[in-house]
Length: 176
Image (cartoon, rainbow, N blue to C red):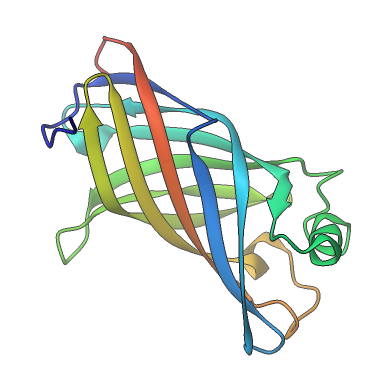
């Protein structure tokens, strides 16, 4: 049974098999929608009291980019766009948590992709506690140009809408 109680402070390790990053973007000059995903390699959620001191660190496998279109995926993974042979990781490190004007929780951080670090803000859409596990779903808009991924303008949209669905299990009882 899922509870709505506040999670206990401490360290939670991300369950990579039950977590994912999905995205939507446009292609063909905005006429088509592309959906895909990345796999997480690992990470931690360090829940603090107060929640504004919470920290999240996560690493996604850039080469796991998947849209179910082998030709498109091969081009995105190549030096033309992500260059995953040179930049195998996409890293998120939070720098602050808080609430926006509408009262939604946000997690500000730095996203490193294609070797370039740029700011990003995730907005929490859902958070659940189930015993020693937490599930958080958060969304963000990522500007690929901010990461130096600027080729194929028009064919591939500038922005991606990311949804991170993260499941994590408490592994350390000490406050973050």
